[in-house]
Length: 444
Image (cartoon, rainbow, N blue to C red; front, side, top):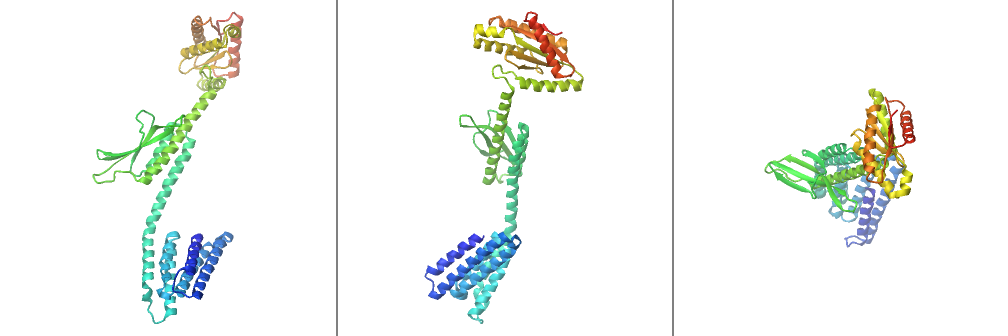
């Protein structure tokens, strides 16, 4: 506000100095001096609150008085009541009412009346105040209109604030949600705030995702569809879902969504798309950190986490849990004889057998170079041994077609006891199977 005043006063000083007004040289000089003095006072009044914040309101009121006196002095130097400078009074009232508050506009109006009265008295006390009625009437009208419009503007500002807060809250909530249902619920809540009175649904995926925004009317309802666009790895864009909105509408009712609302919905769709991309990226990274790149099975980290979870579950439920550890027989010699590619193929073959023979609730992992493990929730020693024997036979059958790959297997089970002891038992039995000639299952 202070910068605006300084700019206006500077312009007035330039006009007073160079414009072809009906003023003498001394009057021009005094007008420039008045503007310069007002500029200096406004600079001082703008600095005071930075040093004494409690003086802010007083500085604003004093600045208003300075403006009114400046207008009065400029009018006095350039023609009195008939000066064009008097018409700056309604401009002052408008500026105060719009930039500060309606009460500031009222204060400016009171000062305007006083300035007009002062000019009339100085020029000719016998001249009625009605001679300056034009600027005063305009100032009154400006303040009245501003007073009527202020509540409307305030409501719009509050509404805009609420919408911006809804967008911000949704963006923050997106960062803390990693589930698609949670992301959808957050987006729908925000969209309902941005589209008051509309029924909103957010959907993802599918081949029916729109590629452009659409608004139409059908069956007594207005419809709006906004695509959720995700960026592909090749730099292009692809619609991954849509924000769908509809509401009942009469024959003459508004069909289209307001342009400002559309812009806000685009911001929401962009934030949601970013959250979905981030979620997918985190899931891919998590999968990579928990999987073996060669076989696609879980790695040692995945097995350890699954073992801890199933051990705790077996302990709570009083059930059992089986573990099978297997090792490819003579794998080093196989690699030396057939090459590393054939060795990798053999490991992939074993992994495929494990994935095929395992139940949905079982977890197969590659926990070492040629060592695998199979976690069997709910299985006792006999059940785990039966699964291990199926795996052995399937690997032997598959290995017959690829240079005779076989595996040795050790089996152990517990009721939720120490998982380290469980693994040690299974590993010890795997060693017994190897010592006994390999290509066999040892469960006791």
